[in-house]
Image 1 (cartoon, rainbow, N blue to C red):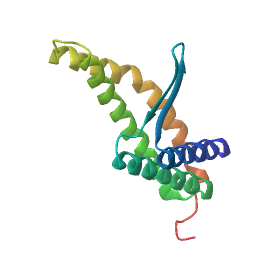
Image 2 (image 1 turned 45 degrees about the vertical axis):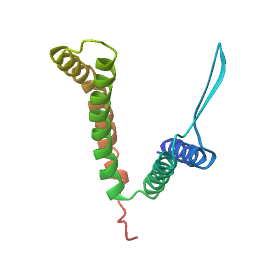
Image 3 (image 1 turned 60 degrees about the horizontal axis):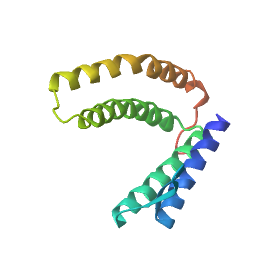
Image 4 (image 1 turned 30 degrees about the vertical axis):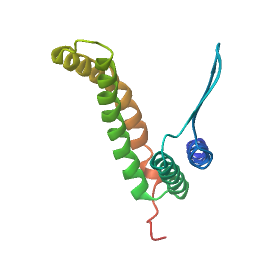
Length: 138
């Protein structure tokens, strides 16, 4: 559980640093370094909000609040749904003549392939429930 909290704190601080500095992404490759900046103030606000939410999540997991366990369990499911839908949409957008049947088939295939992975991690998180015992009022 300690490593999860450390990872969440790191991601939260990186998101806040991104919002403050304005740097959205940083990548290096054979053609040099590419720095992408946030396109608007709203993008920076969203990055800051994400960072704050992740830091609150890390704090709640560290304090072992039961509502945080529930929120994380639901967030895992929502993240999986978002991944399936966004990956399907991104893949379909690469083809000039989009076929709805092909898109649906790819979405279903991605759903089937990713289901065991999600089920495994959901089971692992479910097994952690006994560690979360405190009320949020404590």
